[in-house]
Length: 504
Ligand code: NAD
Image 1: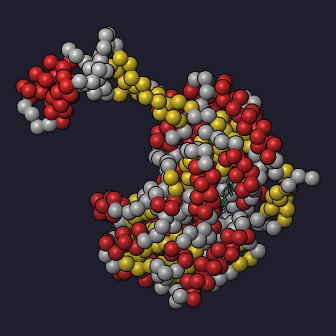
Image 2 (image 1 turned 90 degrees about the horizontal axis):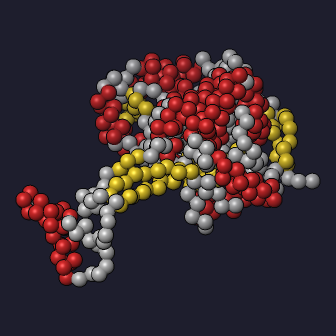
């Protein structure tokens, strides 16, 4: 009997199904199949690859409700959350590539330096090979499919390892890709946990796209370094929301509640800390408490918050709340847990020595910290080892932009939260402990390619820089340096170039 993983419905705690974990031999075979498939897939035109994406998009649209049910079984998240943030966000990304991939990846003509006369230059974006996509459990559809289709449209083949917590979604993704007719071996799914992920790295993929926690990300990078495999890491966040006194208070409160509690806080770009200007702190907190009372908890269509997907995560939330309370924080809501459903927890009098502020809680906690000045707000927001997303709330957009320019984050939203991650046009990724690299947007698509630069020389005969080296060449190079980079007059420049061009 091989190793198994159990799919558990977090809403009920019931085991739904068990899945065979991929063996080392299966991992090896998947890689060999993927390498074989790469030979043909890489030679398809982008247009042709997009035809597969288009078929996939249409199937996802057709089967969206079925997909929501699948995601619900794995995560218990509210139907709207699954439809909007897993399904819709993925479709937008597919459509973006259908419309833009060809343009983004087309050969680019580049400038050629004047000392290379009769030369021209261009850059090609070429497929890398087999891409390993290792994904987390919080958005098991979006965070598996989006990096996969990005890699595929760039001409790579893909092996996806979904989280061991969400294998049903992983299986469904494979079914959808097969239905869309992707050629055998171009896209594969391997089920399993960390051991399978590690084994995939041992098979030396040509790129690893990893989404998950910081500690796992470091292990992935360490293992990948043995073979110098390029690694893209989308890691955790500890996002700050900064609310200035002139902000639209009602909107900011509603934004804070959504940003903190969407997916029960199990969101990499979840609001983890709210900094509110002193003068409005009391009113903001009062309204926030009232707004949070409107949140319905459960599963299905008419609820805002589902269960905690992972038992371990409930322990982290408890640990952070207890730590905050021991260090003097005030609890403004009741702590309530029904099965794996946690009710929102609002705290004030929190400080930067508390785990809740320093680390990623990844749960439905809302800590509020007052600030006096712009400088203080920036300093507090940056006082974390993470740098994923942040949001700034004010009617004064120039002021917001100035604040944003001082924040240490990969992404920022002015007067809104979370959904900037859903724009296919914008690169997304973190700084500091939140990760390495960017996906989404043109930068993200190019990150799944190797950049190959090409230069063409139509010169005849010999070149100035070729052997032999002698004093004449030394003088020529010296003159060229003066003309190109020194402080010489135009006439001398022209004379030098005119003299040397004949030798180039
Ligand atoms: P995790 O790090 O526990 O697991 C992520 C994936 O890595 C899983 O598929 C797991 O099986 C695999 N894995 C575990 N050990 C491995 C190893 N040694 N080698 C290779 N693979 C291994 O993360 P999680 O708990 O699934 O996800 C939650 C974390 O993900 C949070 O920190 C969250 O902020 C982060 N996240 C980040 C983003 C982003 O875009 N930056 C998005 C979603 C989630």
